[in-house]
Length: 182
Image 1 (cartoon, rainbow, N blue to C red):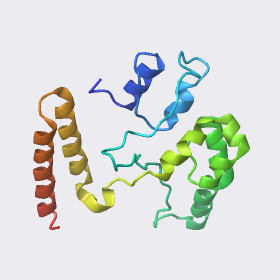
Image 2: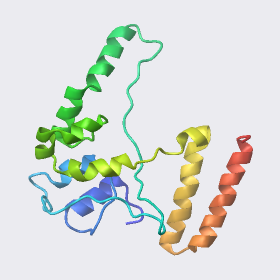
Image 3: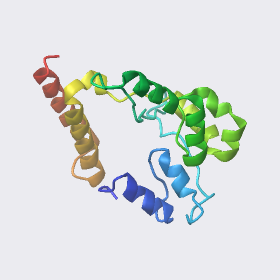
Image 4: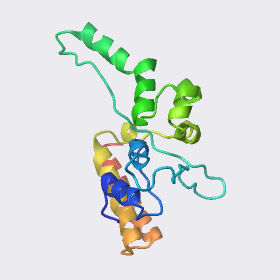
C-alpha cells in the first residue's frame, strides 16, 4: 500500500479491504455511495497528534479560481468566480458531493448537516488545518515535498530509521535553502 495514490487507497478502503484511509473530503460521498460495501460504516477523525503537547493538524487544500489579466471579459469572469464561490453554490456542492465549504457558517446549516453528517466532525478538523509550506518554499516546493515523501517512505519501507531519515531530510532541506539564497 505504500505505492498507492489517493484513488488506490479509496478503492481499497471502499471495498472493505483497509482499516483506515487518509484522503480528501471528496472520498466521503463515494465511500458512502449507494453501491459502496462500507456505506454508513465509516467515520472521520483528526490525524494523530505528535507528542504530549502536540495538536492534530490537517493540511489545507483546494481548488482556486482566478481571473487572468489577459481575459477579454474580466468583469464577467470575476462575476463567475464570485458566483462559484458564493454561499448558494458552496452549499449545493457540499450537499450533493460532500465538498467542504470554505464559508464556516455553512457547517451550522441544518440542511447541510442532515445531508452530510460528516461536516459535524469535519469542522473542528478544518479549524486546525495548516497551510502547506508552499509560500515559504516558493519555487522549491516540489523539491521539498519530494524529499519529505522520500524520507517518510524510507522509514515506512524499513530502509531507514526515523532519526537517520530525519537527519538526511534536514540536510537536504538546508541544501535547498542555501541554493534558494535564504
